[in-house]
Length: 160
Image 1 (cartoon, one colour):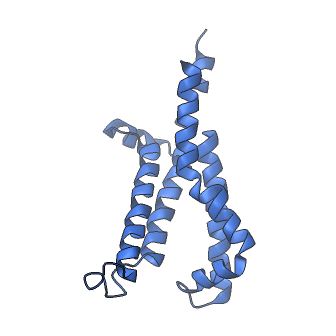
Image 2 (cartoon, rainbow, N blue to C red):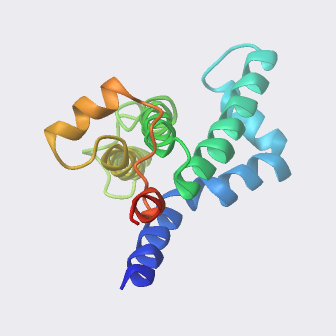
Image 3 (tube, rainbow, N blue to C red):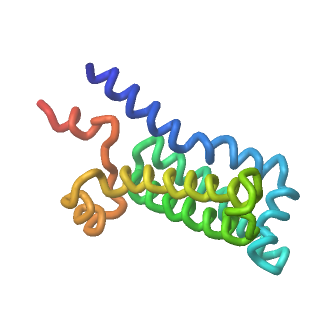
């Protein structure tokens, strides 16, 4: 039963980070110009845009690996939750096109769904960060880098 539990936990965590690692990270690497162009929509300087792309790569790779391995996974999930929120606010601005109510197939409606998908994914990462109860929020605030021990390794080592 422990093996099934570990497999399910790993599968859920893979599903959560799969968008970022490997897909979005690889897209930034193989389509760097496109990523730079998208980043340039948020900042005026090409240097700042490049820094955003590299920061995004760092977050997508390192934080995803933290969530997968369980190493400082709560902190990594917290960063990924923020990343989801920031990217939603910067690049999924459904209120800007002005066609949300006018067209069922307009840019505003498409961005609306993308915005809320980002926010929902961020909420999923917050469940790893804080858990499902108020006591776990307090534990995270007191010790943000502690692992949630998603695979029960620390528990197994503690048993005689």
